[in-house]
Every structure is written in C-alpha cells, then in structure tokens.
Image (cartoon, rainbow, N blue to C red):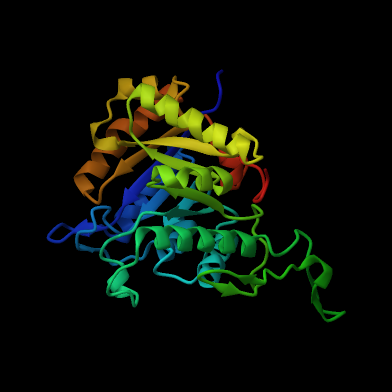
Length: 326
C-alpha cells in the first residue's frame, strides 16, 4: 500500500436566497454517510464565498456540537471568521467543542474577507486588505497560544486538597499586539488531542508563508496537475524553512464534488500532488444525495480513503502531531 491519502468533505450550508434550506436531519444524515465511507473530516461553512446574501438557520460552530452527538469517528471542522469574533471567545468555543467531541474538532480559518461581513461588525466602511491580513494573523496566533496555555497534566481536580490546577503548568499568554490584548489562560480543560486542528483555506500568495508556519491542514482550490504539484511542493518547502517537519502539515486539493467522476478519484488519489482531497458540496439536497449515493460508495469500494479513522482524534486521523509540534 502506498502513502496514506486523506479525504475531507466540505459542505456549505448557506443557501442562496430562494433556495431550500437544509434541515439538521439532512445535514446529520449526510455527515454520517461520509463517516461510514471513511472520510477523515467534514468542513461546515455557513456563508457563501461569493459574498451574496444567504440564509441558514445554523451557525457553523454551534452545528458542530449537535453533529458531535450523532457521530463517533469523523473529524468536525467549522469555518469561523476572525472579523465576527474575539480571539478569546473563539478559542474557548473550539476548545469546548473539542472536549464535547472527544478530540475531533478543527477550525477552518480564512484570510479572505467576506465583503458583506464588516458592516455587521462595527466596520461600515470595511477594512483594508493589508490590515485585515495582519489582524487575522495576530488573531490566529492568539487562539493557538490560548489552546497551548495548559500543560497536559495541569488540571488536578483535587477536591480534597482544594486544588483545581497546578499553577506551574498554567501559562499566561499576556499578548499585547497591534489589534488585540489578551491575558489568558482559557478556562477550558486541555483538548483530548492537545489542541483543535487549524485548517486554512482561500489563501492568497501573501498568506502562504504564514499558513505554512502555523496550519495543520491547508485546503487549496483545484488546479491543473502541474500547478497542483508546484503549489504542494512550495508549501512543503515553506514549512521546512519555518522549522517544521513537512508531514505535520497536510495539503488537500479542493475539488467540486458534483463534477467529480469516479475515475478522477483514482487519478487524484494516486498522484503525488497532494496529501488528499477536499470534496466541496453546495447546500443543494439533490447534489448532496447524488454525491452520497454515487461517489461515497465508490470511495468505500475502491478503498481510496485509506486512513480509515486511525486513532480516535482528528489529529490521529490526519497523521498530525500534537498541537504546536514542529
């Protein structure tokens, strides 16, 4: 058997105005089918990439809590904007979700702006792209720092001795930066997988050094075989230059699942152009049902999703080190 190839399925639950909205039962049923087919993770997005108005009754991170109760193995990843949250609250939310799911959570962070978002969060004039990028990078660094604020054995729960934690194993963040000031630590127990996985997507060229330095998983848009190989090698070289082992960062190619034929699965999974695939689906029940009925059985029959839920946490599924490993 060759190297392990990983499989993610992305589902954008944001329906365009006038489209039928997915119910929780429909979303949960699909995620369970993806789990049965051996997918490593499902990525939930709740805003249209185009920035057009959309509707969904579910906020992505809240949805993960519900999905964690009806699944057992598959990793659960939610997109969450750096503009719509504060770093401490977002870090706490994902850390709590990771405890609920027994270590199956990831955050999909993007450095691309949604043009409609700023006006909903006290930025009626928007925010300059360079400012947004610097702010997002600072935000992500704070979140990862907060996730690493407790050593593995810091929490004692010593009722008799009246000791909740070992102060020597708790680390204040004490961050004072250009955009944020955060003392820390989180008041959530350390994650079962050390830290939730950081997934990054929609990268511009200017984002690549940062992503290669901090991301656990990078989702790249579908490219030609030649450009995919070039991007893959480039990101791995940047990770190495940042002092990381290239294998602790996975690069998955995002392809539009509705157009993906079974024979192309063999081509992609047999290539050296990526560490796996991210199959992207819109909030269209007919498309989702077709994918579940047509392509997921092919994955199972051909045994293409070969990681087969190694271990119990998302990091173990993806062959990642502990959070913060280089």
